[in-house]
Every structure is written in structure tokens, then in C-alpha cells.
Length: 216
Image 1 (cartoon, one colour):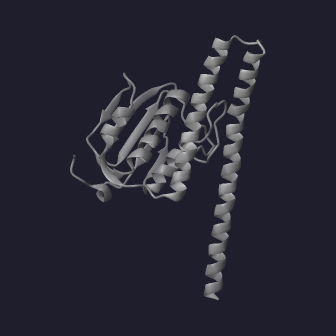
Image 2 (cartoon, one colour):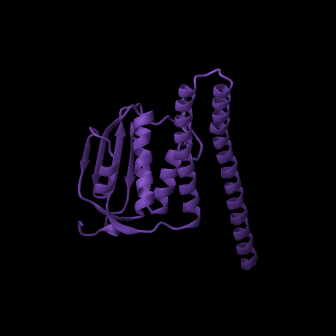
């Protein structure tokens, strides 16, 4: 009957959601295990006198900073699973401007969107960090009606690999594989789309008419 089919469909989706969360937790635990093991090795080496304390402390600081970034991304991911984005009108061009480093080229039109400021900042910062870390630097940033484009100086995303899936990394990457996946999840939660390419760039698109608003 129709009620049985609906109940079965809801049950299947519930179980798949549970399995997806379990897979994500297992992958997150694996990613966190690596920096923790490295920290233990570095501190053990310093205590044994095999490494100068100052150099060990510098390594600990770098590892801790990277781990803190990973934890922030995991918390943002968890928040998206539990709470819908808190949409409010904001100037996207001004938000992007605060995320840029000195000397990074940008063409920023005054654009108002309805978005969650905290989540959107995480998405922009992750895209810029990817360009700096994996794309040999930011080549261009553009904000216009309905589009945010971030281009880097690299060779583009590797073909045949879905980097919007969590914990998937490209060849030779030393990242966590969560940055672009988190961006994709944030963008989708807003009802927007993320378009990798063409070439070494990514584009975030949103329907202009839906978010039309006067410039603040």
C-alpha cells in the first residue's frame, strides 16, 4: 500500500543518514588521529633530547594550528546538519574584501545577498585558502550580481576526482580534504551552486532575482 511504501522510504532514508554520519565520524577520527600522533612523536623526541626544544615547539605550533582549522571545519559541518543557515542581508563584496590578503587582485561590485554571515565567511576563507595553498596563489577574485569567482595560479582541479566529497584529496595534497566539501555543503544549504572550473577557478552562483535587495 501507499502508506507502507512511504514508511519504507522514510526508514531507508533514516538508515542511510545514520550510515553517512557514521562514515563521516570514522573519517574525522582518522584525520584527527594523524596530528595527535605527530604531536606525541614531536614532544617525545624533545623530551628524549633528540630534538632541540625550540624547534620542537615550532613544529607543535604548526601542527596545532592545522588541527584547529580542521576542528573548526568539522564543527561547521556538524552545525549544518543540525541548524539551518541564519539568513540575513549582507554585502558580499565587503565580506570578501575582509578575507583578502594585501596585494591579492579583486574586482568587487557592491552586491547584497541573503546569507548566514558566519557560514559564508567560512566558505570564502576556505576557497581563498585552497587557492593560496594548492593553487600557487590567488590570481583573481570577482564579485558581481549572482556570481563569486575565485581563480588561482595553478593547473586546475584534477580530472576524475570529486573534491566536493569529504576527505577526498587530489594527488600530492597534504590537506584534510574537507575544505571544498565544506564549501559545497554551505553553498547548497543556501540554495546556491558551486561550479569548479573551467580551469583553475571555482564559481559560486545564486539566483539574483531571489536575493534582489538595495545596496546597503
